[in-house]
Image (tube, rainbow over all chains, first blue to last red; front, side, top):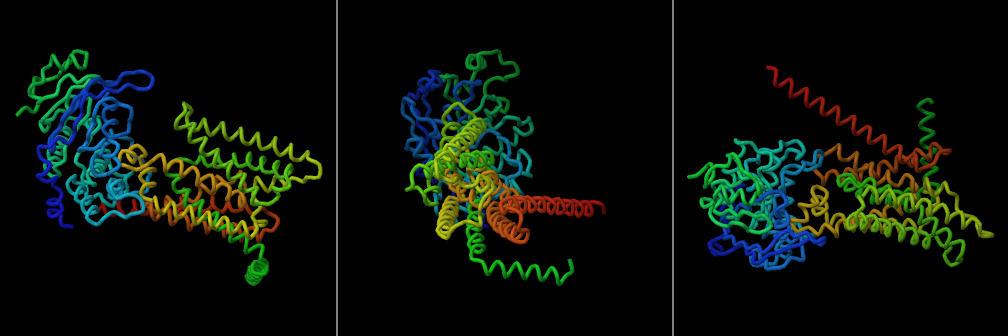
Length: 270
Length: 307
């Protein structure tokens, strides 16, 4: 397959650059049992940029992700994903994609890596239809970019944890979404793996023109590739460039002393 | 037995099969049941729903009790079709009930199934006992319900099960890629725009209908076997789920036909258990072949590594 050609058609296009792909205004959410999960959250993410949302356990990060995917209803405030209500965006199948937390890998599932990546096209293709040839090419291109095309025909149960994670990211990229949500992508990743992750995020963002929102409790997730960082603990405490992040602020968000955190800008400060 | 003797025995079996419309009809009906159950069994195995299959098939016993009582009390319910309809409604409602309890309620799925299963069995026994007390009513033999009565299948029933099989196979084909994603990772499938609720309840309804059909061939106790064994065996033959589904259908159809022929040869034994044991033998064979293939592959890889 002509990877270069596919990559050309992939680019989100200049018409979207500078637009807000994600608009969250005054979002509040409480669970039916009365637990307040989010209070008056405002987020604006420009097309093509990368945002890290960090916060401690129970800060409402997963709730926020579920709302952005349209899986939770009954919130107050206004949420628009590429100008659409979240549930409508999800059902389109090519607007917003999700990379779940490094989940347990189904050990004996009869599917190859390439087949798992093609699963990402299901929502876009719709029932009773076969994926278009061009979409299959994009899925193949996603395999190439994530460096797992040599594993395409291997059973998904036999690849390593890291390779599985790459397959799941490729699956999310296959339908060419405008917005990619990553849930705790650095759980269980060591320092060397973090460098790889950082490079991968840059590559994805450059190659696919996709907007990345990384949600994590792990401060190491704030890699240099993130233009913006948001600190969430029920309310939004901070939403700006990572260079303005201070240890005091982080200690306030995480409600504990943070040892081993390095000064503003992160470890990889440019 | 000498070779000519065995040949004669087979020829006799062959002639007996083609002489007897009962046998042909029974095999035809059984094949439809095997087809729909084996196609569904792939998803039962991959989604780990085997226990739901068991639950629904035991619930069918409760439905059968209700149908028997209705027949005893109301002469208008005499026909087999009315009986099947009652059992089918009972099964589908139980299946959806298990689904609702475990998805919306606070019960875990296996608890919900465990409760529904024993409640329906107990209810079935009581209803059948009540029906037996009705003067002049002879209840059908319990054995036929529990272990199947494939030889008594009517032409009308053969038509019904083939229509059901066609509908279920068509539905699975239509939603195949959605079902695969659903079985692989339900949460992710939902996030990618698959309507997982629809698939889950649709699968439960299909399972309920398949159990009613399977009841005729292998009985309620063994119906769960047809919904697990073909898929479990087929999974050992391929790493591509499309092929697994096709292989599962072939194994289901072949296992049923083989078990049926065995039951013709061994006249004193019931068809249902023979079919189930044939499928178990196929599973054992599949495991053996896979183990052999893996051993060969390892040996070849080892041989390459040495020099």
